[in-house]
Image 1 (cartoon, helix red, strand yellow):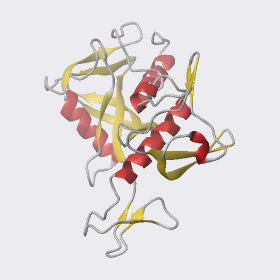
Image 2: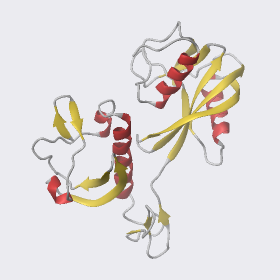
Image 3: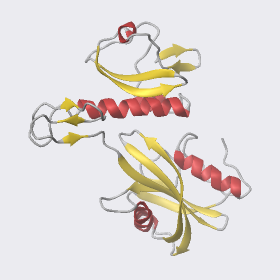
Image 4: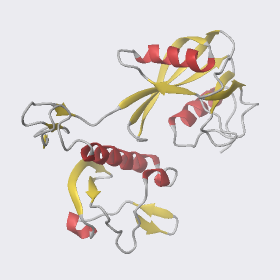
Length: 249
């Protein structure tokens, strides 16, 4: 990242050599604002050139605008996949890059390995102008969010929504409706957002993963909500806007 007075920007170069750092295996990411973008894997021990700094992906969260952060997240996921798939997972042979797909293929047994994407559902449960927020034991003090969890093999997204809600807060829901999605590169999730209407049940938490949950409204919000560029905050803000309120910035 190039250092600037108020944060930083992703570096630009006409050729890879202009970056001034040892790297391997560039990966094309597409274009942003008409500029071709690549991800490169730096050699072990590489140092940032003058005027630049090496930043971990989590350090960039909240520093970059959402489209640029998503580009950085995509770069992270692709480089991490490439680092861990040099060899075939079936027979151990060195894997080649596929000629047309973003994949590695074993020249001996033909096994194809694609970048991993782990689908997860995240859902706002509503009842009138109220909605459920829960506190995960790993959250910062006072932080609450909506219900999220990974989709299991062979499970439809809507089935995952209903199961996660039942497991985490003990509620039964109906009218499960798609809202939006967001790549979440920690390390390789795809968050699929939903809303769902409460059908029955009282909130019951397990006290381990979820340590607290309750019904909230525009007039009664917790001390802290998720950050602004997260899909969870976007879903919460949309619900509050439809019910005459707004979360503090």
